[in-house]
Length: 382
Image (cartoon, rainbow, N blue to C red; front, top):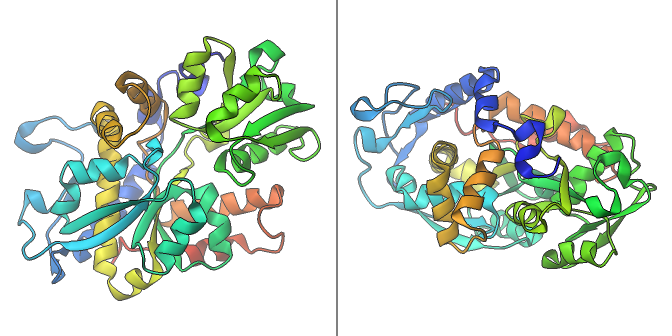
């Protein structure tokens, strides 16, 4: 495959999503509808009526049946009283967190009675999780494969929903003969750090495809922006990282870089990569606030899928890299049609934990089912 859109998994991601089984959408509708009973409306916690539907939309407008339409407070009784202030930690350079600025700029947070302030932690996940756990931030959006190891170590942060799938890409140097995963044996893969989601995921992927991630390849660390330069200099023959950079690097390479795999490849097609984490004390003390925040971010996530151009422009307005056209294309290559919750999400967390054992990130004696139960918090059912 020579371009992001050339991958069989990404030839028409929207059509592919429409063809998938509806069980996950039913799960999402169930979870959000059940959570409506505890949706906060202002600081006082007034219950708001909310419904979910797939068609038709307001004023008879057609609604894409792939996305549940959440009828929020704006469609019924507006929230009264002061908005509940919250601090949301995120990485402003990562397009996988676009649901947050979309929810802010389109008024979704406000309609849920929330006044959300962003705290940009970049790629410093440990600081981000520590900020949430200690109350310096109330919640965050980030990559599951960056968060799960710190959560195994005991951070008081709970996962409440998956946001979307896709955005990690493994790129090979076609000029060096690396055009498929098997070609990586004996080669060097450039990564931005040794605990990055890209390294973690593709270590798993390589191990599952007959390439030993410890013996058959070398993972070499470079500054993020220098990853393609490492390939140009011949110091690496592949790189692993996330959008928007990987998508842009493929386009700018004019065929030199080819996509070997993504975190939507094969069995991972429905796997969430980006998750919502909320501090445990907020869930315990103010569950309706956690419910409102989770619902609002999920609405933002589905708006990203419904209107990728809006999402691209919003992300760009917060300093995100890439042209609007590139951002729309990469959003369409990802899966913004699936936001797992409940048993679906716990199954995915447990699966990630098992896979992280395979590459020696998780302790071999970790009970992954128990781990998933511990780190997941159901805030969407009464």
